[in-house]
Image (cartoon, rainbow, N blue to C red; front, side, top):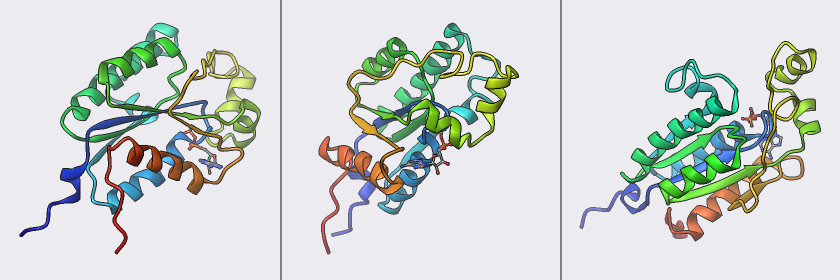
Length: 188
Ligand code: ADP
């Protein structure tokens, strides 16, 4: 009998990483992508920084624009999720209501809170944005001059100031397995 491709065993799901700039969303997402691809699973990535250069180009950082950004990412995620794709979203997505709205619409959804304190993110300042926010060069910067509403009940909480990247990624993989979105690998 021909072997069944592993990807036919996956269920569509959106894995939504929310958290401050520099908290670790993209880093965890990249490492997770590699592991899921190694397992032969089909996925798509929607990274906030990249999405803002095409799908949501022209939107700013007011509450309305941020919500619209999330709504559009959610729309595409939904299309992919219902067709069996694992969608990995990294977006600051600071407002709880719109995150919940997207979650309810998509259904198959895992919310991952990437939760380093703002002081840690600022110290990392991966993209030099916190310095610009402090000097006033960037306005409405989440965590400095704009709000962030933390998830009240995330499916996964990655405390990147306390755990290794490997531990963070593993938490998400375990959740995907527990919820039956990806198969648990069978030991050889
Ligand atoms: P974001 O996408 O949330 O803006 P990035 O992934 O670009 O954040 O940056 C996160 C930074 O934190 C990276 O420099 C990464 O190496 C570091 N880091 C330290 N520990 C972790 C961890 N456990 N998980 C993810 N990133 C971590």
